[in-house]
Image (cartoon, rainbow, N blue to C red; front, side, top):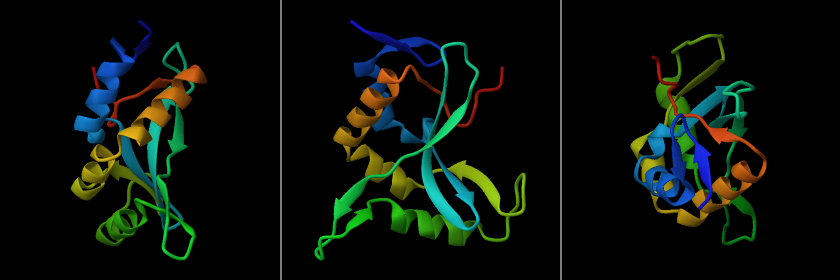
Length: 133
């Protein structure tokens, strides 16, 4: 059975289950220049080389155009957070909204894809917000 590290080691099956049950532990919204994206943070096997990965859940609309499953939720989050500053004047990250959590929880294939992609590239998933020890 293959294990991956998330501060502690766990099986992909357990991590998948936790990501579906508690997506707020792993996903966050990054806003830059007024554009919000859903992200997940990873590190290398030494716990360094932190990277943010934009994740998109795409679906086809009635016109045959690919659209983001999360875009409406992200746009609302930007509107709610306007005027707040953290770090730089137009750049911040914050936890996902309950509606995004619900959407992620309903997409097990989305989680499966992320786990396969990230672990096959030697990355380890980092909790959001980072745990302070």
